[in-house]
Amino acid sequence: MNAPPTGARLWLAGARLRTLPAAIVPVAVGTAVAVGQESDTAWWRSPVALLVALALQVGVNYANDYSDGVRGTDGEARVGPLRLVGSGLVPAATVKRAATLAFALAGAAGTALAVAVGPELFVVGVLCLLAGWTYTGGPRPYGYLGLGEVFVFVFFGLVATVGTTYVLLERVDATAVWCSVTVGLWAVALMLTNNLRDIPGDTEAGKQTIAVRLGDARTRVVYLGTHVVALAVAVAATPIAGRVALGALAALPFAGLAIAAVRGGARGPDLIPVLGMTARAQMLGGLGLTLSLALTA
Image 1 (spheres, helix red, strand yellow):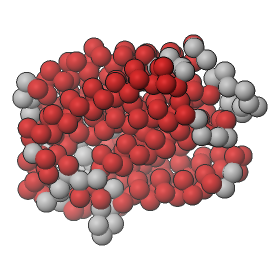
Image 2 (tube, helix red, strand yellow):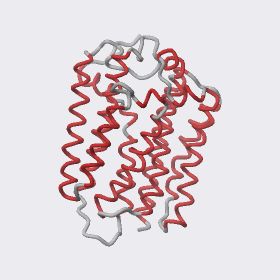
Image 3 (cartoon, rainbow, N blue to C red):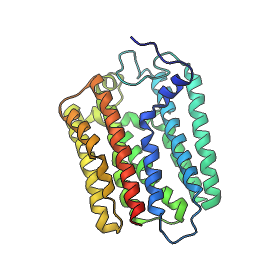
Image 4 (cartoon, rainbow, N blue to C red):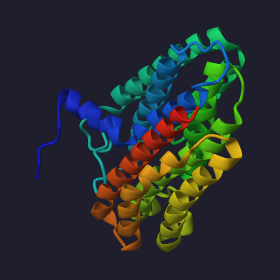
């Protein structure tokens, strides 16, 4: 057995870097939608929006680690990436402080955008922070009620994509709305991979994720459906929105590999590589979508 990581490597493992495409892709796509639009765009807002998204994603990961750890959900039998609290490597209070710091960074960067754009962003920011913490924290965490996929679709799909375009153009753009559906479904696929893998442990811990509620077989069907619908929406968006969104099809190679593994019955440790394939599909599809949107502006 390999020795657990220490120092910075330990905290990077806890940050779950494979999930970061869920933060990067919507900001990239939302920025691409703004390219070529008639406006006095302040482009500095895009990297600040990326900082908000990344800090929020890392904050959610640490908060999830903390909350699941203190609830006892992450037991020794858990299959999957290292958990800081559940493994006993980091005190729960320390992980909670790390989550708070990440959320504070997201809040500070979001405040800068709200000051530049308008007070409506304060409301969106507060909702994002509350949703990030109560996913697995608080007295009634909605992640334990099967609503985790709804959270990532809304906040790492619709809000992050449309919100990025909004802070650049200061208006809601129809193309961003269409593309946010594709982006959000990719984020859902990423979470479904985790929840499919964790069905046995989550069932034992009483964590009623959508995968636990649907069961193994139907969760696999839903996973396939997220990829199919995500790409179908991108194809449909091209004639409807008037911008080429076909670059999203760059996700197909890794999405195909991930779907084949899930349909082939991969479970437990065999689903860990599927998480990486899903993240790569999300990243490549997002990059392709970003380029196709920007180049046809």
